[in-house]
Length: 124
Image 1 (tube, rainbow, N blue to C red):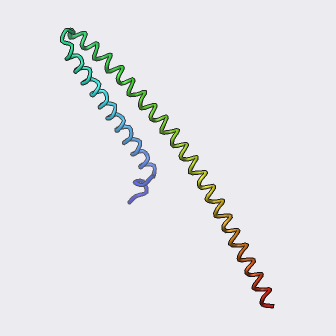
Image 2 (image 1 turned 135 degrees about the horizontal axis):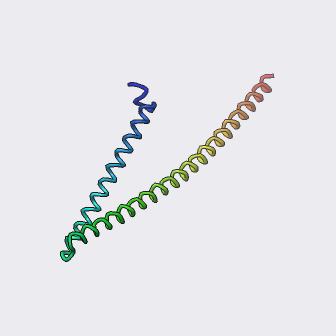
Image 3 (image 1 turned 135 degrees about the vertical axis):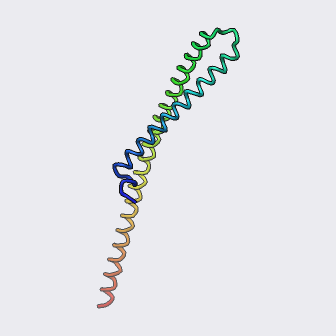
């Protein structure tokens, strides 16, 4: 296995390309879904002319894509805030654990020193 396949420059570039392709496909799916919904809506309004149906479809798709974009931006923002909260909490927990380990190590060393001193005193 090459270094590039596991986090090297090429692996990062491939990951970015895959993310962009996934985003494009996701956007395309949202657009198609919005268009189908708009066409379904227009089909329930038989009195619309072809031009009116196209105009309604265009407006609906535009509004739906805007709402989807805003929703995704809100999710990304919330995910960023949650990530920061979790990272801060993790750092706090690591710091507390390090303090506890240091305190335990000090206690063990103090006990070992005390036992050693006691052994030396008793050996005299």
